[in-house]
Each structure stands twice: as structure tokens, then as C-alpha cells.
Amino acid sequence: MTIQLGDVAPDFTAQTTEGEIKFHDWLGDSWGILFSHPKDFTPVCTTELGEVAKLKGEFDKRNTKVIGLSVDSVEDHEKWKGDIEETQGEGLNFPLIGDKNKEVATLYGMIHPNSLDSLTVRSVFIVGPDKKVKLTITYPASTGRNFQEILRVLDSLQLTAGFSVSTPVNWKDGDDVIIAPALSDDEANVKFPKGFKTLKPYLRLTPQPNK
Ligand code: BEZ
Image (cartoon, rainbow, N blue to C red; front, side):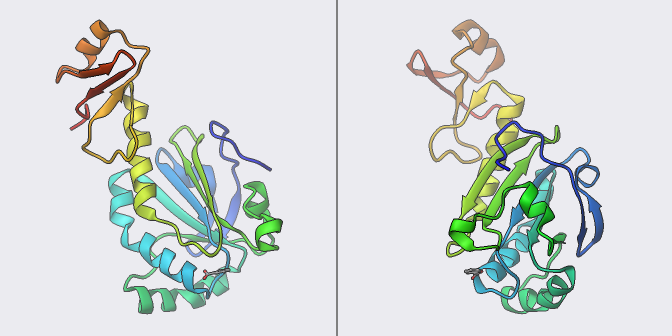
């Protein structure tokens, strides 16, 4: 199944390292990040899970719950936990789904057989509080993800959900943002009292409105 932006994130019930989870109920009113990794006891995955654990406070600040998945069992996840803590300096502090029967992986199209046989690739889904998919990214097994980029996109998604703006190339939290071209200058003056710079009629920059 191909999941597209704007689709409702498929709901599921799964066993995790923190017990059984019904995905939509578990998300509640939060944002969510569901990400898969290919396999337990593998090097890149070990570094990724340690990094996500270190960033837990950053996800919490953004009202975002994270949950990982591989097509290994919860028992394997439990055995692997110690290695993550020992080598990465941070233990798992978020749930990992055990998906031995590939049910969630299949539902989310996380298995790309021409790339990685029957294992999950490195998929990322960001889900909004409305349960709709806001972002999908797929990385190959050989490339560990940059979770700072995922935080950056989350900042952009949360900002643009609340204001009539979009974020330019390489934007990061605190930088100027782009006023929606649909707004007239008069409307922009009301909505963005800090003012704006007009580079072209369709390209107007304003200080980040929620700072
Ligand atoms: C890794 O996490 O290092 C890995 C997992 C599966 C295939 C290749 C690399």
C-alpha cells in the first residue's frame, strides 16, 4: 500500500516494548512519528535508536510521540535494548513495535522487496493531531537518518499549520518565513505586524510569527 500525504494514517494494534498499543488511541491529540528500521542487532539501527532516545526531550517539547518498528519480535527488541544503552549512552525511552508477521510494515508499505528483500527499509511517517500523514521519507538500509532534519520538518509543519506561511530552503526555527501568496499586502500587514520584505510580489519574507 502506498501512503500519500494527507491520507489518514492507517490505524493498527501492535505489541511493543511498552505493551499493546492501539496506534490512534496512543497518539491521542499529539503529533506522532512512526519510523521503521531494518533489523535488530545491526550497527546503523543501533546508532539511530540511540539518537532518537537522546532527542526524546526535543520531541516532547513539540508535543510529538515517537514509535519505532522492525520485523523482529518484542523479545528481540528487549534483548537489544542493553546494547543500545551501552554503545550510544542512552537507553530506549519510547516504544518499539515487534512486527514479526509484517502486519504494520505491510499496512504502511515499509517493505521494498527490490531494495531489501523482506526487511523494512528506513521509513519515516509524521502524523498530525488530525491523524493525517504530513510527511513520508524513505532511506536505504545503508544510510542512517538525520533526525535533526526530522525535527526541522516538524517545526515547519507545526508552524505552517498555524499561520499562513511556508518555510524557505534550508529554513530552521527562528529564521524568516514566506507569507502565503494568496494573502494581499493589506491582509499581510494585519496578520504579520512585525512587517515584511517584498523581494517579488509572490516572495515576501516576515519574521517567524510565533517567536
Ligand atoms: C544496519 O542497521 O546497519 C543495517 C541493517 C540492515 C541492512 C544493512 C545495514
